[in-house]
Length: 293
Ligand SMILES: Nc1ncnc2c1ncn2[C@@H]1O[C@H](COP(=O)(O)OP(=O)(O)O)[C@@H](O)[C@H]1O
Ligand SMILES: [Mg+2]
Image (cartoon, rainbow, N blue to C red; front, side, top):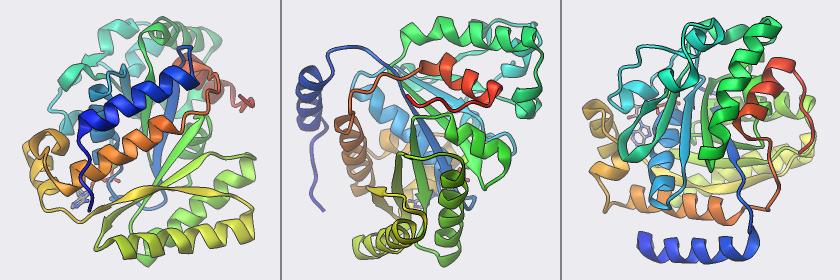
């Protein structure tokens, strides 16, 4: 394991970004998985913490409608959710919570399952709330839940970038493949990055990646990029129980260093494409269109 100091990567990323982008834009990342319990919420939340260290303005949205639990992991208690915005009781600014280190957090609720069946007025409430947010953000991370239900698929497909989490378990691999297949049926040119979590070794993670990449290339004609892996780390369940972020609780560990490297590689992989922002993200879901961006 090569340890990389956060500051070193920070300088590198900032330099590269100055050269390659030159304009501000929002990257939307949908964190998803085929199988549940593979680490999505922990990874989404801790990635958000790392992006904050890179001085990115981050919004976390919990769209895991069945098992929403980012709030628990961040030790927050949401009083209101997106449902209150849609139904006109609250404005977006009233429901957004400030998480640790300045992460913004939007809690969803199972009421928003049918975004496509909202009335035009309700849609406008939703879009207007997010429109005001767009100027204050660099990165939006959406925790989408697991499995190939139509809800999860639409939350994933509306995003420009997809972070698919799997473990080396055969069931998780099969479900990850099923997820990629379902996505590829609905959209061409998917931008999928794979993270292998809960691995016993680097070799096991790489083998997992190879298995998935070879079948998706062969049978689906989809190229999945390998973002990296995290080992089984007993500190993560401890941090979870403490409702703390593991990158903060355990800054000098292999796991934090690995996730930091992945965050840096993610930031470096920015191809400069202009995106539709968080308002555009919800417009895509609510209007069930997937425009090419
Ligand atoms: N790399 C890891 N090592 C050890 N435990 C982990 C790791 N990643 C996640 N966990 C644990 O696995 C459980 C499920 O994680 P969670 O992020 O809630 O998954 P999901 O959101 O996919 O359901 C939690 O108890 C968490 O602490
Ligand atoms: Mg979760």
